[in-house]
Length: 260
Ligand code: ADP
Ligand code: MG
Image (tube, rainbow, N blue to C red; front, side, top):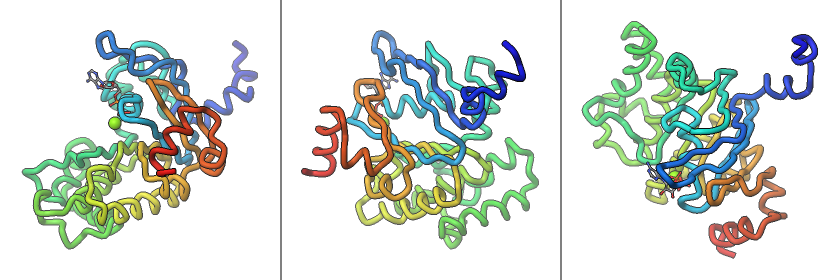
């Protein structure tokens, strides 16, 4: 291929701007076909919300983006690095991608502060005082500095999830993945976590969020993707997605979660 021309082609420009690119991705768990020809591009700075019924493949999709799950066919490229089985590529992608899970996944035997400094110290070789100062900056950003010396079980679910977000941010990610970050929380704690996520979105972070919090989606998403049965069924900006869903499966899902 002609190098100069390919770099200037619309396709190459779109690719260069991509934070995450999936092309024809398929994944099986044994015989079960969990992702079916999924193609998706998330641009740098874009906020994408992924929704769909339970079992539709949302978790599988975002876990494939940092190789917590392996896909069997198709292409996944993150920040220009292909996830093709090369272990160094996997390390590079994980170093740049932060992930927040439904169940927080904090280390129970470490304090809040130690949860946040662990990776900067051991993965980035950061001196401990510097890692602590960094962690306190992000704990401040999620408004939880006063809990820094407590253990995760001494915190509410909402506080634990905010720590999990701060912990991810301590590694200076340029993409953040969220997998239903508020669905394990009591209702009164959902907004404190969403507020942190909204601030993060407004700071320009590239985000791929699995969530059914449609107020969040309306407010910050550039695009909503609806999955069902392992495939992307439909995607649109929020105003179009909610007002004019095209597919029957999308309409049914929206009527279930929005209650009309
Ligand atoms: P969602 O997050 O949309 O609820 P998942 O990605 O968790 O969906 O799961 C998609 C499908 O893959 C489901 O049918 C689920 O049972 C199946 N699945 C997920 N993880 C595994 C696994 N580790 N082994 C076998 N099947 C799995
Ligand atoms: Mg899931």
